[in-house]
Length: 151
Image (cartoon, rainbow, N blue to C red; front, side):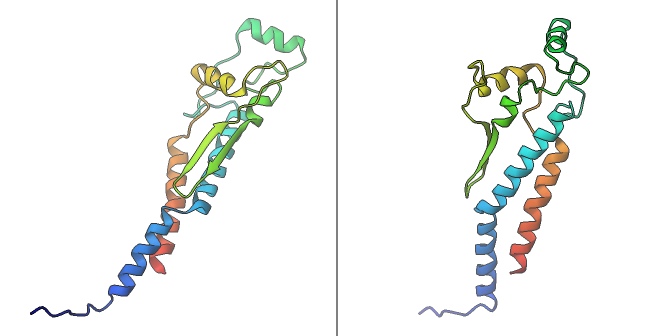
């Protein structure tokens, strides 16, 4: 014969685990992470810095001359000529995670923005997140985790 014993606090433990599960399947959390990542990439790139925080390497002399002739700055490399590529940067949050990507749009000359980003990233690594940004994202997740544990 078996006896069922009631374990004190089991409902609270079960509820906490369900709350934890909600943290890691939380579209709102991934919306915040995606917005943060997009903002970070955009801000860093506009400042002329790569993922490691280093200045982008200068424009080639030929390209610098082209930019100057077309009335664009040559002093700071920020990967913006028309703004089309960086305007195509976006994110998509789901309950499972977030995807950062370039929308399949084209600039005025018909060049694919995702392809442009791919080749520019080979030369000047801008599409990624830094160690500091990873730490900030981790803190965001930890905050949600701690809040879930309090419920």
